[in-house]
Length: 373
Ligand SMILES: *Cc1c(COP(=O)(O)O)cnc(C)c1O
Image 1 (cartoon, protein in one colour):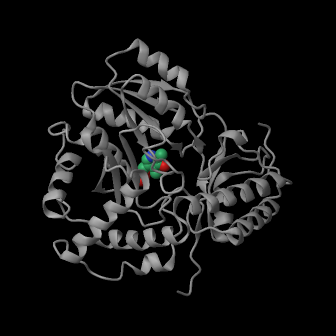
Image 2 (tube, rainbow, N blue to C red):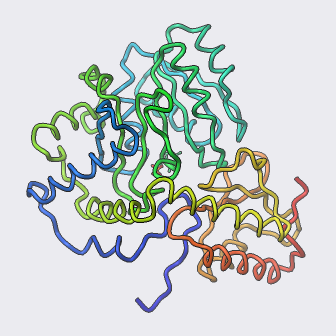
Image 3 (cartoon, rainbow, N blue to C red):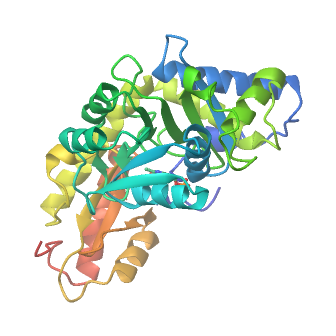
């Protein structure tokens, strides 16, 4: 390829390897035994990352990550159930929107743009409301980059004997989460974040005993993971046209994930990316939204410079001209932007990004990245 591909400093889709892209250069029949074997291996490998007790099953579903979140909520939260949504950003908010569409009862603990929901707060709500059956939490809230205190919340949910559903879309594959560490009932993620596959399907890792009770819960055929699961168990096939090329790319991505040392290896590289990036950005005068304690190795929010020459659109275009694609911020109060640490990024790419940042500030005649925040 003559043109240099861009580096995606975004939380997915992310920069993938050439070998992952090349794995898509083959046509698979959906009914064919080879493809069914791939689906089986895919599910077994994903389950093995959370559970070796035989308590979880993997149900993949076509579409982006949100489809998998919606399908999980539709399947697990029954009509007579009630959810507590822990909200501190766009993805928690999206779960309430999904529940609105489905007409499921819920309450939300809204912590604003970036404050973490804490165990005691969850305990107080669960104590006061016995109708709550399910607690919904986002692992890494990608809108600010905060890593929510998932273990602390899981302990409380277990103490009150409610079910826990974790949107670990942007964390699973890089942040270890095992059924033996604390109790949860479902983890949702997708192909194109920390596993470094291409976008096109999501998956839910579900506690089998909960899924078995979920027949008839879903309001929608396409979103019914119980139906997808029982059909897959029976036939080895996806119910409807599977994203064959994307599954093939994902199998290659899983292989490369294992070669890098699995979850631990990926966590190490992403953490290194994050530290190198934050350190370099701070040297340029930029400030992070979050204190170090809450920073994730997935994505980091920086305040935009308050200098009058700053415009996000120009900043973005000038970085793009240097092959770095950044991500706009999502804060309601202050202007910000985000830099992802995930995907095929190593020291050289982080250093290249920092050099590009310095050059762009210079070109915009902004003396440093300082913000008044
Ligand atoms: C990316 C992401 C999603 C899903 O987003 P899609 O655009 O539907 O793939 C859901 N939750 C979190 C926390 C995410 O980072």
